[in-house]
Amino acid sequence: MSEQPKVRTTEGVVQGRRRQGCAVFRGIPYAQPPVGALRFAAPAPPHRWEGTRQAVEFGPVVPLSLPIDVPPQGADWLTLNVGTPDPGAAGLPVLVWIPVGGYLSAASSDPMFDPAALAEAGVVVVTINCRVGAEGFAFLDDVPPNRGFLDQIAALEWVQRNIAAFGGDPGRVTVGGVSAGAGSVAALLTMKSARGLFRRAIAHSVPGLHSTPALARQVTAAFADQLGAAAPTAEALRDIDPWHLAAELTAFNAGLHAHRESWGRLTEAGTALCPVVDGEVLPETPWPALTGARASGTDLLVGHTRDEFRYFSVMSGRYGTFTEEDAHAALDLLAPQPDGARAYRAAFPQAGPEELVETVYSDALFRMPSQKLAEANAAAGGTSYLFELCWVAPALGGVLGACHSLDVPLAFGTLDSPVGAQLIGEKPTPEAVALSRELQEAWVRFVTTGDAGWSAHRPGGRLTRVLDTESKTLPYPEQASRQIWEGHSPAPFDLS
Image (cartoon, rainbow, N blue to C red; front, side, top):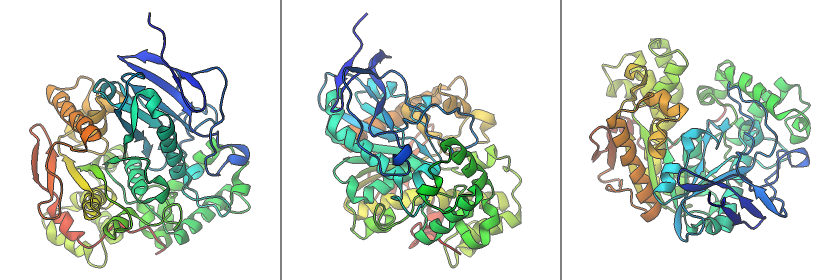
């Protein structure tokens, strides 16, 4: 049996293990545990250690503000994992994956993000944990905002210091994510403190979830009031158990619709505590920053699925039940103002309430933010490669359609992971395997060369890779929606 792999980082030696043809290191701290005096603070540099640190188990899961039964495992949340083809190599491309969902969960241990297939293709894969929910995004008066983003930057700084020791090239780092992870990637494109920490970006299903300080302050005050805290401050919340705080946020999110009159569009997002456009950590949203040349473009692989909202409607039990009243409310809150509701009904004259709800939710939450990020990045001098996944998930008789997150197990080659099996089925079809290979090859080519393998998306042609049983490069498929949103960037949620 060969000796288990060891690597010397700037903080100390870590020992991983060989697995599926690659060397895997887990639970490496990139910052100190954010507890005690460091709770709700900016991430602090990790401590050094003597001897060899065993890096064979994932770090503790960050407290999740989702109805998922995950027991508390400790407070050393700010850790990352590295999967490398060969620690003794040099100059390999690096993918840093941010596994954040809804700004409510971040579990780098999810088997969907297993690095084995990508590592086998020659990529060093880093997956990170970072603070989410109240720990990462509550807008508290006495600590920095957007602490989850600050964690991500600390992890990227660790990568710059250490990834060469794992065979990676610090000058060839791609940062990637799906959903709120993609929103994190988009934010990093605009943040001065993130400049120079990565070269390329992958963003699947970019959400337009941001709050103004005025709204964030009111929401956090209401949350603190629900908790019985004396004030919306870190000092007042610091003694509340983190997992209890996460559970309270789950309950708070469930009651958002009661605040529709004052909090408006935020109540449709499902998460009360999202990134705040605070002017410092996050100076502005990415779309105007890029189009206004206040942020530089980069190599960007960005896309969305055709039926983004379907997963949420099916899993919540609402699929097939939406009424004309639901459609009216969705159009009123989410369509671009002032005449977006009328434009949707004119563009989709045969659509019933179900289709209208699904279309406007898919557009407002993911499809238009993704497409507009591709255009904004190109306007800022970058090269954008856009895709839309149209292949229908076989599970549940195909009712899920080409739903949110279906593209992730395809890209990682983790079709047998719990999420992969839930969407694709226990026995992937040859079509699923072929599509997975195609998307994975696009990822590997992109992180290696900056070219996804199809024509770039530019305002004139707006070419898009339509991923299906027979993939094709075509003009952007969602033209009707794009025209409705012409001139409307995703704006931060604000007080009504």
